[in-house]
Picture 1 (spheres, rainbow, N blue to C red):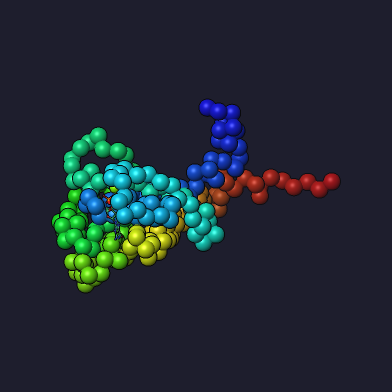
Picture 2: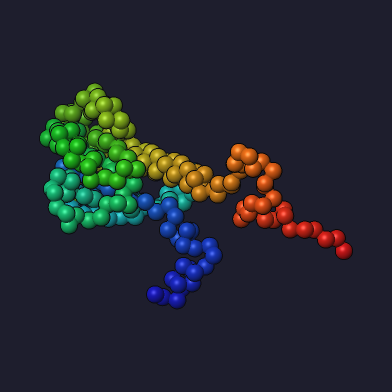
Length: 232
Ligand SMILES: Nc1nc2c(ncn2[C@@H]2O[C@H](COP(=O)(O)OP(=O)(O)O)[C@@H](O)[C@H]2O)c(=O)[nH]1
Ligand SMILES: [Mg+2]
């Protein structure tokens, strides 16, 4: 371990501040659903008509959400990785959210999400969220998947739904913002539950018939007020 690293880990203020608010978010969908383009729009604010065929982009983006600095690891994942029963699959235990893309000019890209949803959900940890995103919103005349049909599906599943264009950039940031907001919300809710359940429970019951026997009990948490006070 590098000395700076060990200093950080041993420091009173670390490692919480080093790893806090770094969230893994998967971006998946059919081939050519626009996964790489979406990640590139968010990380580089750029778009290429001939997006290089990239199957597993992994870019980290930083945003400020409600006064907190948040780092999101956006990882491109082929939809097939959810559909195979491969046990050697990468560890997704720390995945916080899945953004599922379909290309609104391709019915096939929407159908695969609809039909395979049970398999997709099976591979996600229980405290993660799914957001549905229709891409290619700029290609209005070629649209095949209507807002109505995708809204119906999103409502039935309880997912948020967005339509975006990585070409113009429209709505791309809104997707990320909503996903990060909901992760942070869940994070704080979990922290609060943890705080409550980790509080010590003080013994306060008195056995029947031994109501006056309190002096003889030994309660580790109640020794402080029992120390005799001598004034000088
Ligand atoms: N017009 C338009 N083209 C897009 C959009 N998103 C992706 N593309 C194009 O669609 C093709 C496939 O996109 P890509 O991001 O590689 O898809 P992936 O296979 O899911 O990673 C590329 O040629 C992109 O330039 C979009 O929102 N609008
Ligand atoms: Mg790609």
